[in-house]
Amino acid sequence: MKIIGFIGSPRKDGNTAWAVHKILEGAKEKGAQTQVFYSGELNIKPCQGCLSCVKSGKCAVNDDMQKIYDALKQADALVLGSPVYMAQMSAQAKIFTDRLFAQITPRFSPHFKEENAGKKLILVFTQGNPNAEMFRTYFDYTENMFKMLEFDVKGLHVIAGTRNGPANERKDLDIAMKNIGASLESKTL
Image (cartoon, rainbow, N blue to C red; front, side, top):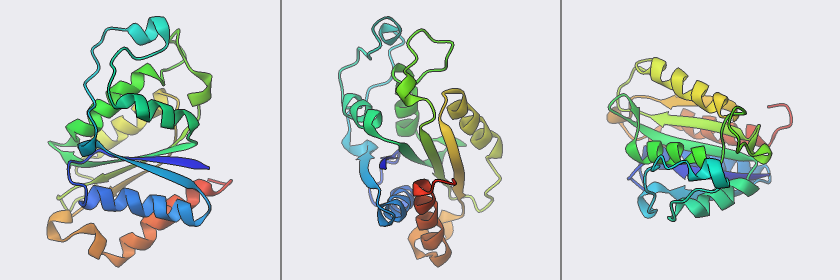
């Protein structure tokens, strides 16, 4: 199994990066091949709304997203991590998500790519607010949007209360995140 991790945080060593790495570590321990993309190291431009992808099946914007498209094509699963900024995913994660339109679109689109249907997805959000349900409406919306894009959403996980201490200092999270990754390799997930 090949799993791609996308860290939609400008902090390479922050809570979101730690969570995505732990999930991938759990998957790797079960034999998965993993690859990580850091939004802060990539030049990804916003979708231009040109609809070139509808006509040609390929995004017209030539930037680092092309590397991610290639990796996603080979991947069985995606782990998308984002901190919660202004009650939603970060701008970096949003640009990435918007650019998925060129590759993964619902069946009513003329350029649907069959190989992307049913790709497993884990969503992980980190937030300073200690109430994990604070932004539930947004999290549910995001999960449903990915389901509409025909991802097989295997889980949405919220790590709350990171203002009170880094996620990597919470022993319960270390095991939980690795178990999430290990479950991606499972046939019963």
